[in-house]
Amino acid sequence: MENFSYTIKENGTVVEVEITGYFDGKAGATVKEAIWEFLRKKKNLLLIDFLNCKIINSPGLAALMNITLGITDDFRGKLVLTGLDELKQNVLEMAGVIPLAETAPAKGDGLKLFEKS
Image 1 (cartoon, rainbow, N blue to C red):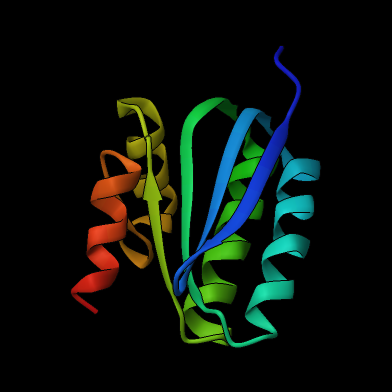
Image 2 (image 1 turned 90 degrees about the vertical axis):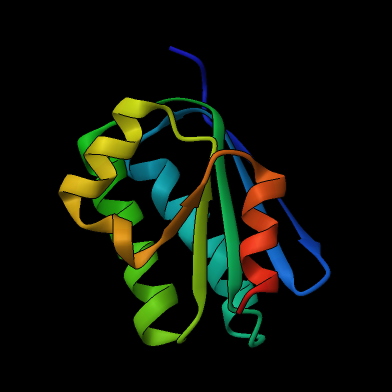
């Protein structure tokens, strides 16, 4: 299993997070803490790219739901998920993450969704 890592950066008004490897509950908690630092500073437009994420396990899915609800409900922000393969897309739809979060095939497409806000 490929180890989890992430990068996070600001791209104008959007905070971009790139996920690599195995996304489990511990990875979700790590990403949540990093994202919350930006949300507390009123930076509530987020894009999470899963292109290089191999697997999202059940605890990771629960963490992602928690992150999604925090962004959309607690901080009244917008979340766009990119780089999802068909399986991840279907699982996130069944779990209810989508439609709370919007999706786009690639990061560039996802950034365009923020322009429409």
